[in-house]
Image (cartoon, rainbow, N blue to C red; front, side, top):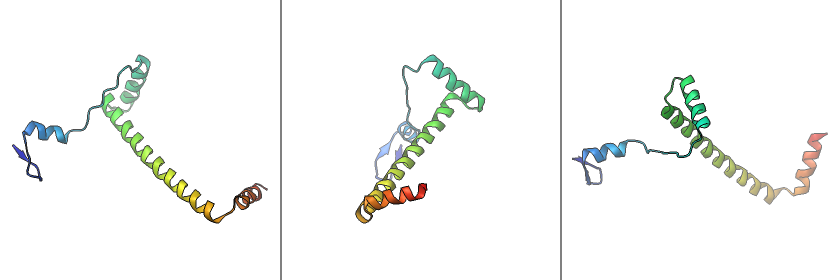
Amino acid sequence: MVRRANGCTLHPCQAMLELMGKVVHVRDVPDEVHDKLAGLAGDQGLSLSAFMRREMEHMARRAEAAQRNAEVMRAARRKIRSRVPTEEIVAAVHEGRE
């Protein structure tokens, strides 16, 4: 048996399952999409699973970055609205175009 830090015990198989990543099963993938992804994976010397795992990791990082960027933009908009009149912003934009 494997003992957790909180005192609970797990069967070794359960402990191993907790260490493994999650399984994602995608249904109804069109043949041409599957073939294209498998080809891209093969071109890079990866299995389809390894390729998809890497791409999902990239997607998750991009989503996190987009969320952080959106928060920065919201904070900047709040700050601008509270201090600079819209007319001044529009005038500065027009000035920058000339």
